[in-house]
Image (cartoon, rainbow, N blue to C red):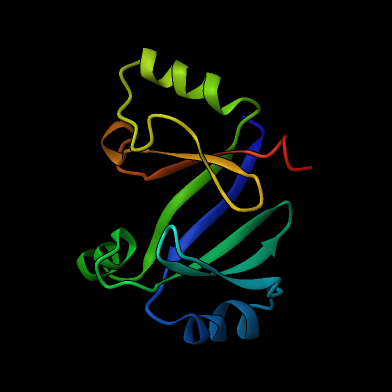
Length: 135
């Protein structure tokens, strides 16, 4: 593991959530991005060497929207950076860890990522990132 890349917080409204995170707390708003593959709009807020990501669902049938409806706003997932995502997933499979993504997915900007099911992590949805190919 390299570091905590980000903590993602699901919110019903990005602008409303920014009133606390950006205006009151003072975190900078780096950018807002629509991520159609995950059916979310994301506000990226740098915090030291990590980020806070605010997630607003854009499709009422998406996993994030269902999470918000079931659990309400709050922490959605923790993301760790790893050196080699393929090797990390192989190690997790060898330990019978339940993966949501059996193989890495790739974002439009080249990040490789995969999710680990909360049933295997003590209740935390875990995202793993490999960034070495985009720098």
